[in-house]
Length: 158
Image (cartoon, rainbow, N blue to C red; front, side, top):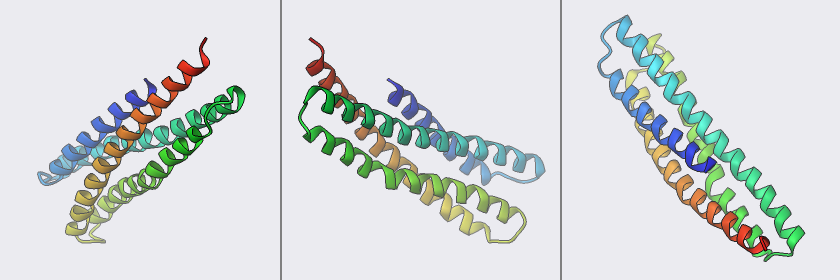
C-alpha cells in the first residue's frame, strides 16, 4: 500500500515536471520565469521525495523479509529476489534523482546566461525519459515486492 502511494506521488511529480518543462517555453518575463521555477522546484522535490522513499521502502521491506526467512525457515531464494529488486532499481533511482537536481540547477545557470538554453532543454528531455523509465521499473519491482510479502504472510500465518 505504501509503495503504491509513493508511486502515485512519483507519477504525479513526473507529470508536473513535464508541465514545468513545457511552461519554460512560454517564459517571457519575470512572472513567467517565477512560475516556471516554482513548478520545476515542486516537481523536482516531489520526484526526489518519491524516489528516496521508494529506495528506503525497498531496504526496509528487504530487512523484514530477511528476518521472516531466518525466523520461519522459509526458502532462502526469497533473499535473492529482494537483492534483485534493489539491483533493478537502485542505480536508476540514483540516476533519476541526480538528473532532476542537475536539470533544475542548470536552469538557474541558463537564467544567468552561464550556459546555453539548449543544454538545459536537452537535459530536460533526458531527465523526463529517465524518470518515466525509472518509474516503470519501480512499478514492476514494487508489485513483485508486494507479491513476495503476501506470499510470506500466507506461509507464516497459521
